[in-house]
Amino acid sequence: MEFNEKLQELRKQKALTQEELAEKLFVSRTAVSKWESGRGYPNIESLKAKTDFSEGPVWKRIVAQAIPLTVAQLVQLLYNVVDRIYLGHMGDGDSMALTGVGLTFPVVSLIMAFTALFGNGGVPLFSIKRGAGDDEAAGRILGNSFALLLVSSLILTVAGYAFARPVLFAFGAGESSYAYAKEYLDIYLLGTVFSMLATGMNGYINAQGFPKIGMWCVTLGAACNIALDPVFIFGLRMGVSGAALATVISQAVSAIWALIFLTGKRALIPLRRSNIKIGRSITKDICKLGVSNFIMQGTTCLVQVTCNSTLQTYGGDLYIGIMTVTNSVREIFMLPVMGIVSGAQPVISFNYGAKRFERVRSGIRFNTLIGTAYTLIAWLLVILFPSFWFGIFSDDAQMAELGIKAMKVYFFGFVFMSLQFAGQSTFQALGDAKHAVFFSLLRKAIIVVPLTLLLPKFGLGVMGVFAAEPVSNIVGGAVCYLTMRMTVYREINRKIKSDIITENKNE
Image (cartoon, rainbow, N blue to C red):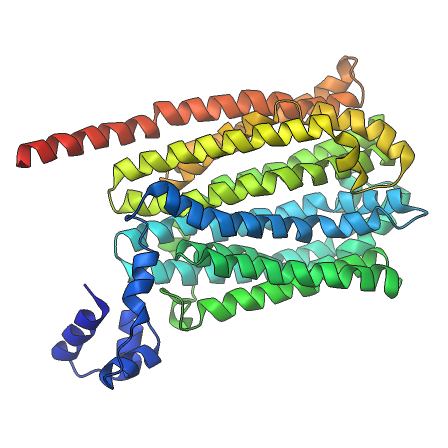
């Protein structure tokens, strides 16, 4: 039903105030006021047309979503690594500062795990409800997700301060590197609430068909981080503390931007105070889908802890620093493909909810093709120019000499990660929580962690830690994608054939 028709119908049914009408129509009071005064609400239908993922070529819809999201992910890269770039070029002691920041990665990953659980877990549900035309239910999912993110961020902040010392030593810190890690973490934890809200809420902006707004959410924060880092690290000589403070301020800017949009007039389904509450049923549904993302991030934390502690045993702080650089280079190449996957997911979910199964299949195919082509190019760039990529993060000659060899081993078979992403994102988009959870566990917990512990003992030494990654990419990626093809993809094909048969009978 069109906006004006909905408004007329509600007016006929009962005498409602403009505030009540705005609440029921999920628009602003200004929109109702404009219509009733004869000025109309010219943008609402064109806006809906732009955000209706069931119309137009699927690949164009995905590209329209993916381009700004990919740009946002590239900007997000600066959020994640600009601190390390500056810290890696501080001069004396830069390697130890880089190692200290690397030791905090598991803590950051754990925070992101809860963000993925309560934020990303709700986005597919939100998109499916929006595709089915149930905006009221979508609004409740948005509010529930916000409440979960807020409460969990406060709990994590308190726990982080309470257990920082034993946790960092358990994660592989030595006496020298601990001082840098603690200095960074003490300030970083202050921004936990901003980090979780900025990342968790951004998915709901994208799911409403506003990827450019989502891109700006990340861009503004990253711009602040880039500008503030040299001022705090070098200008004010704050070093590691300055890097952490710049990150917290930048996260706050991103969070404020996201909330201003979601509570404003442009949001199709705004964040309303009445919906900000934790409901058992909605929380259960969010967690069912979000648990796969939680496990992916949680197992990332587990992998980082296992790697750091094993590297400390076989190579010391220097190799923890090398792993920090290697992971940073990996982030450079991972984020664009994550942007592509993120762009495709709401389109696939929306069309699944709208029962447009041919478009769902087209989205999966396009997602796989683009992801494979990109990761193949990325792998070649690392193999051909390893010194360039390593030099971005460190000017330590000894670290570079040992690190380039390790990085080539780590990136072997990187193209298989595209299969993991294609399979994993499809399971998530279609609400197949069981497969999504299993394959989150398979690649990291079942393959990487045991190999990280075992390979160094079988003659590979410290290089065994780096060799665990390509094995998991090849095995985990291939198995995940093949399972997706044989399960949900096959079911989509069956539904397409059924629709064709039904159409032919009707004719």
